[in-house]
Image (cartoon, rainbow, N blue to C red):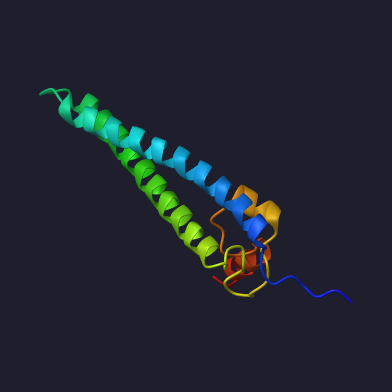
Length: 125
């Protein structure tokens, strides 16, 4: 009878670390782009009296700001995942203590819950 695996080995963790570092680099570039767009929109404001144009500009800035906030959260979650890799706790479902499948971690590398755990938590809400 084989024992159930309780954590990913160092080689597997290194594979996930590389994936996360790539995602982190991409996310940081996207965040920097959003921040630059917001700075450019703020600095290029002209005293425009057209209310509709102002409303559209404000809506656009708000959308960019929301996307930047989401990217900032994603970056933070990726950094937490790197900490879990260093602690050798990466890929362990925080509720059940079982391993999250590699397929899920490749898609959502900052996941802390298996899909079934996440679904059962959402059903309780």
